[in-house]
Amino acid sequence: MYLTFVFPWLRDPSTLPFGKARKAKADRGLTEMAHSTPFQRAIHSGSEWRLSRLRKHADYQRVYQASRKQFAKQMSYFFALRPALGPDGTLVRQANPEAARVGLTVGKAMGKAVDRNRIKRRMREAIRHQLPLLRAPVDVVLHPRRSILDLNFATLGHEVAAVFRAVQMAADKQRTAQRERTKA
Image (tube, rainbow, N blue to C red; front, side, top):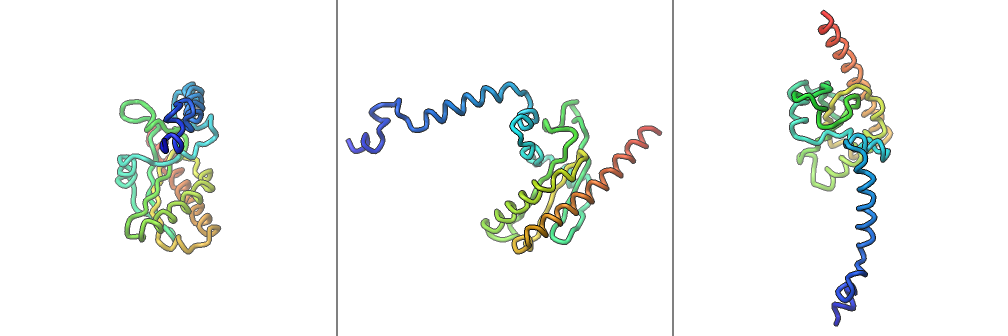
């Protein structure tokens, strides 16, 4: 008797509190299925930020192996041009072949989980604001320092912008060098 008072859906399953939410989510899923690739779904939803992230371990490893560590005041970074097509002829990780992807690494040496999560939140927001500076198909991995915790957010944004500008300039140089090699 007590259970049916606290959980009325035990008496009548049609009164489930999450039934309507599930149905609405399922209906949204039908409209999203009309867009075939994750990139098209993200563009349709207005959120291409989700697709501008490095997610796979293999992508991180490829960036580490293809580049040298670069240094900025508050972080170090790696970057590598991304080929438009993978070895099998498909798009690399179903990503937009013209957009940049950014990965973020915050190790346990940065402090406890609360501090690491705060560093990641601050970095993600700064990256989101500065992402339009990267126009080349490049993958970037950022390693922030612990001093990010105490840094003014505007200064953090300027630091990320400086890194992205440096990466864009270097990527432009590499792309022109590749084009010249293919012409010759």
